[in-house]
Image 1 (cartoon, helix red, strand yellow):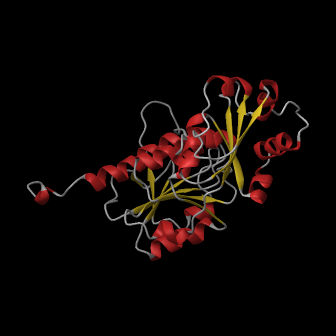
Image 2 (cartoon, one colour):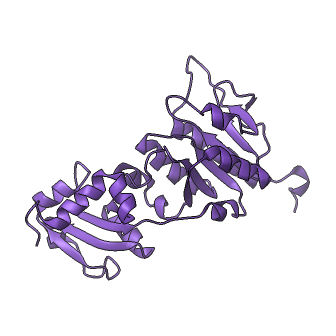
Image 3 (tube, helix red, strand yellow):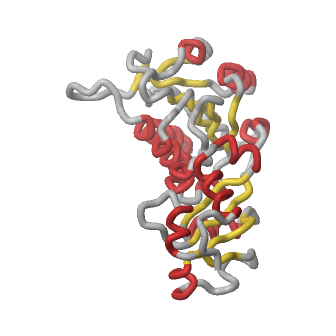
Length: 267
């Protein structure tokens, strides 16, 4: 049992929790909770597991992590490793999944979400979950967007991080041009968007851009859009939360793809 907070393994886990640079360097991230850790094992991404003393005494079986080895950690030490207020007692080191842009562009659904400098971890985690639910082909993020493997993002995805393809773009405008070259129109949400969000035809595919929480879509990215769109609002509101806006638009794309033309209703 590991009983010291100065143990090299414990310090390494804490560095991964705190530093995006360290995560990128090692190509590892931390997953907390039995659900996320067992999902990582099911996708072959789990490298190492740490179990709190209390959890080990009460629940853990040797085969629950797909044969991946684990170390037992004193409760107080485990608390220092965790990023949650009430740790669940299971923490895993997970190898990062990775995708190529071409993989996302080649998906037959042709429905892609693009994030222009999104900064809030909770928003990104919720967006990844919603992208899975709406059947999106993938999520493309600008390089300045929040780290997908930030502990809060990982928890918020509820496992979608293992199933939704993603890609960090050095230049989001260039990616938009690549989508348009593949006959995928790209729409961006703006307060003064030229048309309401449900007016475009998304049935053959679309890219949807969500901007930074404070500043919206950058001028450079906006200049490459096929068209700007807006979500109409009553009352005195000026904008919606980024994750809420993304959800509305992704499910509109999904709704249109489910809707058959009138001539096909009897088929």
